Length: 303
Image 1 (cartoon, rainbow, N blue to C red):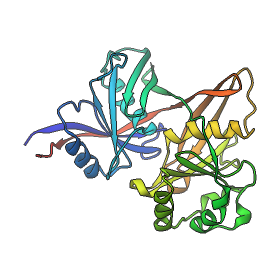
Image 2 (cartoon, helix red, strand yellow; image 1 turned 60 degrees about the horizontal axis):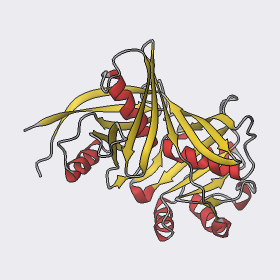
Image 3 (tube, rainbow, N blue to C red; image 1 turned 180 degrees about the horizontal axis):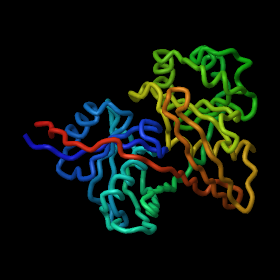
Image 4 (cartoon, rainbow, N blue to C red; image 1 turned 90 degrees about the vertical axis):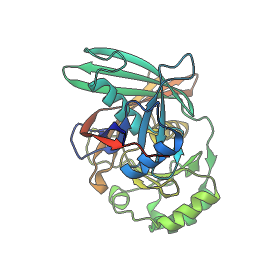
């Protein structure tokens, strides 16, 4: 039986067994869609990244991401994990210390990335174009309160509950957010009925004084009960905060640290930089580190 190398990498952390774990296959060009899906199911992580040759001439590589149940168009933490894996193996020209830029082809478009190798440390930044459309979603406040098993007074009034592909719910106090135990069955139905891909619940109370925001993210309808650290949600979250006057932008940018994963024992930290042009969000850069937990081989499914 043929086998391929595969890794498990914890993203948005330097500490093993923290952050968000992702599977990574550095060379997946000989796998078909079903084989990738079966491998992701076997890894049973929130996402597994498969690195492929690009199809677009402007791209340097292509990445596809699979949860245990479906393919997703973008995954921030698994991209951090994938680029860390390539860098530590010296692939795509990353043999020495330095700064490396890549255009990554994805099903959601071209994703800009930057990898910095310096003194045995690898830092990755992703440039994600934020959405420009948010809809008021406060009419579902009572439904969300019931699903989250909290009191209506626990929901902050500013900024308002809004949505794009995700729904954003502000919580007043950290201890309430930390103790959240949502009804995942009800949340799945709620999200499926409204074409939502995730619930982002956050507070401006933080564990560490240098942090700006504390986040939890749920996507049970996509096979993720709770994602420990969610890179892809921090771009629309930053733009949403800016649109609602919650960020004090100076010289066209605002930088902060977001906390996530602490309540489920997977502490992660996301470095966020929002760049603004003509009073509109231009790009959000998501940064973080990663650490490889193990490397092994997995049998290629015979399809």
